[in-house]
Image 1 (cartoon, rainbow, N blue to C red):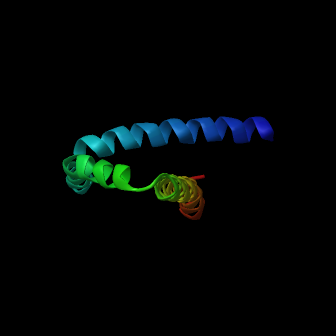
Image 2 (cartoon, rainbow, N blue to C red):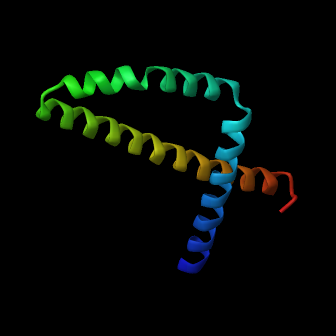
Length: 95
């Protein structure tokens, strides 16, 4: 069973990478958010660098942890989508 889970995880990871690449090329909301981040990255870095070391480390750890949390949620939702698709195909008697 571990081999099946590993194969599925690898398959899902590749599908997520492909989907992400397509998203960044075509999704207008993502592109607008990316423009905002690019536009204000120097200001953000300037503010971060103006903090004392303790606050800077806290902010960086907080942002990293939040991003990791969001990635974990996204991965779980992506896998749930596969599960829901299989359930739907079974309900439609396709599987």
